[in-house]
Amino acid sequence: MRRILSLLVLSLLSLSCNGQGNKNNYIQLETIKLPAGFSISVWAEDVPDARSLAMNADGSVIFVGNRQGKNVYALKDTNGDGKADKKYTLAQGLRMPNGVAFKDGDLYVAEVSRILRFKNIEKNLENPSYEVVYDQYPDKAHHGWKFIAFGPDGLLYVPVGAPCNICDPEEIFASITRIDVKSPTMRPEIFAKGVRNTVGFTWHPETKELWFTDNGRDMMGDNIPDCELNRAPNKGMHFGYPFWHAGDVKDPEFGNKGKDKTAYTAPAAKLGPHTAPLGMRFYTGNQFPSKYKNNIFIAKHGSWNRSKKIGYQLTNVVIDGNQKVVKEEVFAEGWLNEETQDVWGRPVDVLQLPDGSMLVSDDMANCIYKITYKK
Image (cartoon, rainbow, N blue to C red):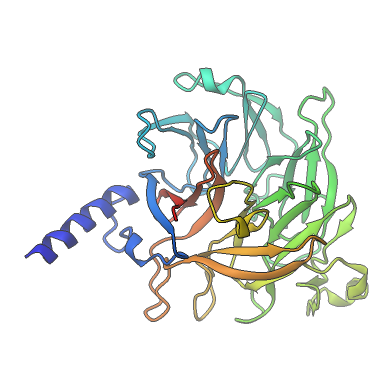
């Protein structure tokens, strides 16, 4: 009887967290495996299609973008119990407002073709309004959703994904651009080329070099090409798309139209075929054990068309003092049941809070998790 009651309570909590009452999509935190000392909980529930994450300067407000929906949210823990209890809808009816970034009191949101600014957002959560900062990005929906972030140079970095699975598009596509949001005559500058579709990037806390994930092309089979983790210390680097994938896989359609593979920058690490690595952050906090300091945490959204699903996990990438990847380790897994191939959640983005804990968004379970460590 006690077992039945426990399962009933778990099911009810799951329905509350996923916000849709989908009986095939319960939150199943008991399946998540983490290293010893770590625990995971639901920090925010009923956040439809929770995707990219950003926070204000002191971490008291978390901003959430989405891709399938049309809204942008702000979340707060008003009672200090370690869980969000207040949700603000900042905008509705937008077009794939996936990207969110905060700077100097303002929130920036990326749609497919526009960058929006919500001025002084912390004081206007109840009555938000926005202005269009820039509206000349391409309007192609394929890989049109964007992750955005401000770099150490103060510029807003905005990717423009390839408008296809595989093609050789005009220059601004398959790139990472940057834009000065304070300039009266804005014009995006291309920082990196040959990037098929990055939905996550950040800068090394010490070297200030850009690192980013990139999703590999589809329809070449289950095992090729790998998705990528890339390092871009300088402007003007080309990472191979559409000619080469993962550094050494020549594209069957466009490979002969490009140069030798040595002309392009190979990935810093291969992240597995079709694992869909999205959000990533360097860990700079003090709550986790010291071995995680300056490592990269990556959210792998998981494969969508592979015959056997893979991904659906968080990984930890260890980097040495020479900016070389030493290894990638699984940090959290359990959203995918490998035996049955059932999936109940898909990690999207990660965000370190001021206390050193970490948030993880999930656009399938419509939740945001919190991962903490205690000895």
